[in-house]
Amino acid sequence: MTEFVHLHNHTDYSLLDGAMKIDDMVAKAKSLGMTSIAITDHGNMFGALNFYQKCKANDIKPIVGCEFYMAEGSRKIKTGTEFGNKYYHLILLAKDNTGYKNLMKLNSASYIDGFYYKPRIDFEVLEKYHEGLVCSSACIAGVVPKLILNGKLNAATAMAMRFNDIFGKGNYFLELQNHGIPEEM
Image 1 (cartoon, one colour):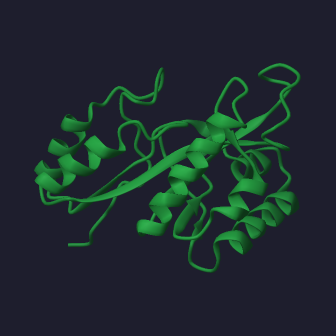
Image 2 (tube, rainbow, N blue to C red; image 1 turned 180 degrees about the vertical axis):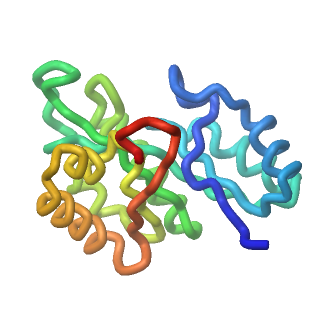
């Protein structure tokens, strides 16, 4: 049987977006015979320790990550409205201890000097703390999917290549989802 790992999951720590409790997520993964699962809550890592401990107690490999909010420009610019100062989604997963430390640094930076409506990162901090991380383009709220949906394929390709350059070959992936909505088909 081919193994499958869910790498984009929100728990009740993703306020107004996730409803699954960590205990329930880990129990479901175990009941399905899954050997690994990821946590990628929106803009925070508040559940990471609990998730890690529950997975380890159930012989499941925990993959700690976060669905960051990526500022369109500098994370330090705090003007405009929520919709005027755009941000995009970006999934980052730790592949080792260095990656976990960099997730924590990115998360801290998003709150300390990037918070404006949402805790945001930007390319400046991403380029500084990319080591040990795997990146995916995220859902349709990610910058690459948004460009594709708007028919800007050359810009989407250039942006995907920028992420690939930052994370290195084999560490950036285009994410595919199918929740039955037309934009994902």
